[in-house]
Image 1 (cartoon, rainbow, N blue to C red):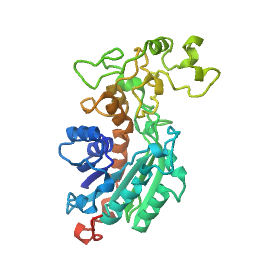
Image 2: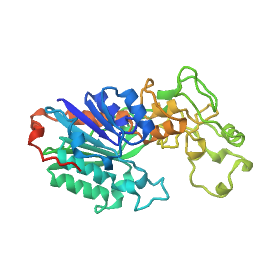
Image 3: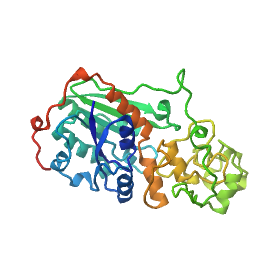
Image 4: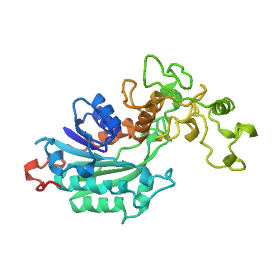
Length: 357
């Protein structure tokens, strides 16, 4: 079954990569971040790229890239920060909360065969009268059957504890969800050691000469001392009092901050600040530095030859925002495994009339 993909809010291309690895064809990516756009173009030369804000695009522009045969999938992994529990300054008026409605505009007009959305679990807690509930209602009114679940990426081979809300919709068919492959009585969970143990050593602030993405942020003298006092898999519970921050005195919470990863467990979820020792459990298990950009990308399951563009901070943000390619691949494989007898794609010319918006 041939499936062609338009990746809305593509970022650097985690979803596109997973779908391509599963055998889908990547038609186009859409994102307004210039560094993510440069990364995407670099790694997906076969795809058209719209470096645009979706709110400024017309439905007709996307229609032009769609093939006249085969099945079509729209992926819409909108920015998750407005719904994330990590964002303590969440604003109900944040304009990013409307992006799912903008994505809906393209789905309802062009009726792709499949729709995939990935976001943080907190998104569904906004309520059925919130962005997700309204989006699901619009899909169902347009003839889609919808499945929505919170998936743990570690259950699909990703070496990272990462809970994500995944929505799959199929036009007129039951929507498939991937079955877990790891954990419990299945294969053991993938670990940090499985994926990054053989990378060459670098020091804090260094970049490896053979890989410009194997680069680590610098450490202050105080944070270097904290790193020395932190064992593999440990955190500030092992520090002497003079190393503690004032806000940590007598406070038992936020134990992942200033922590090291453990070799034989999955990593903590990679965030947009995954290169910063002070922003999570992102210390290397035994080297005295935070994980490098390459290590973070590998823990997200990007291949080692995937190249990123922009400053180190921007590249880290791209990695943290990405859908793990391996998780996306498992979702795509579930879609591709659907019985072929479930119907053929309606020709584009017979679908809803497209009006520029």
